[in-house]
Image (cartoon, rainbow, N blue to C red; front, top):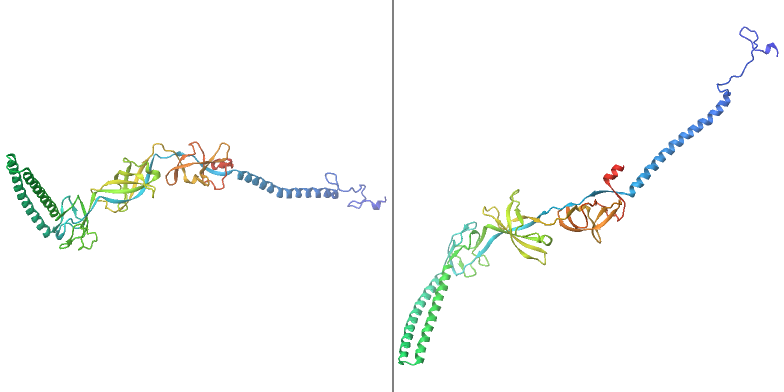
Length: 413
């Protein structure tokens, strides 16, 4: 090697050191290092892309598995049967009626001379409501009394004659037949006197009907009569009222209310059943009443029991003919359990409920419904107080279907 080919220093002298190629810290040349870094970078990028795509898929698959597992067990709400109340209020519509109700008719024919009571008038028993003028009846009574006087005279003569003939018969002064004839004539005259006296009594009774009186304490609700009107016994063709009713009187100090109790509750209604009335015109006020009597038989058409309720109305607050709501407090000696109506399933084979068993599955049971409390019903048979009954079960709920109570499901979640 010549000197001219050697590397020279800055001062132009030739350097004796040879040029050595540059190396990295690893000892590999730069080109080879780039060749090694490229596959590593590609592997890193590929791993990152796989992580971005696979991890969400794995997470979604896990959630889907959880949802499928949860759907296998139907989430339900459960309730436990509780004792039904011993007393139940039965609300029924009722019509208030007067305790006594009478239509007053004329029992004798004549003209109305005067009337004393108009509608709304409170009257006492025996109080005169109207006077009827009956001149023909008065004349008949006078004639009947004259007939009685004649019959008395005839009987007195026949009786004395019969006694005399009986005396003469003892001395054989007259025959037995003549004595018997006089005795028979005396008996006939006595019968005629009794008939005349009965006729006087009849006419006197009719004359007493000239005064129309109230049969009981009450109030006059109808007056169809006026002064000068012609009235006849049992009818009144001269009045606008076709039946001939002169007055109508109702007893209002005590009222009757009739209700029809359904057959299912008929056995709980007795004479000691507590009851009170409410009306729309007196909001917030109740009227004490008592069950007086019942028909003691179920009506074959309506399947109800006719019950009469008496109400003390001495203050006159209630009016006859008004509508009232009757509240009956029905009591039972052996109350059963009750469930909300929403827990019932109406299946073709009867009313059922779904009970959660120890195996975590729904089991359908047929039940018997007792009293109806509105949103709750009494379950006479089919459940116990320790049962867990599904509330609001779906119509598709099947027997043996896995279920889980909502609270338990929330804890597991």
